[in-house]
Image 1 (cartoon, rainbow, N blue to C red):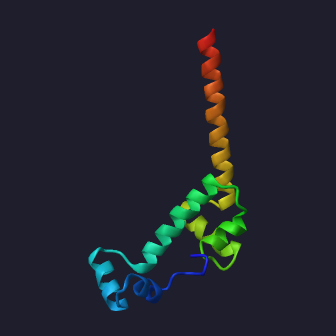
Image 2: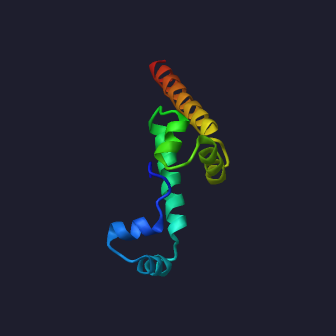
Image 3: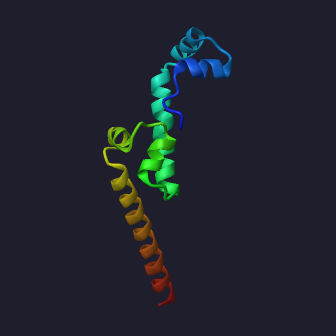
Length: 110
C-alpha cells in the first residue's frame, strides 16, 4: 500500500485473474474490493499505532494515504477518534494496567 491505493486492476493482475472474475468472486463472497481495502487499512492502522512509535504521517504513508489528514479522517470514520487520541487511550490503558499490577503486588505483600 505504500504505492497508493491498490487498484482492483493491479490486484487482479497480481493474482492472475481478470478484473471481472475478481469482482464476481468478491460479490459471491458478499464483499467489495473497496470494503476489503478499507478493512485491511483499518486493521493495519490499529496495529501500527499500537505496536510502533512511527509518526502518524509515516503510518499514513505506509498505508497508502496521500497525506496525514486523509488518514486522520479515515481513522476518525473507522474508530470515532483521531489517531493521536487512539494512541493516548492506549497509553492510558497501559498505565492503568501497570498501576493495577503494582497495587496487586503491594496488597499481596501485606
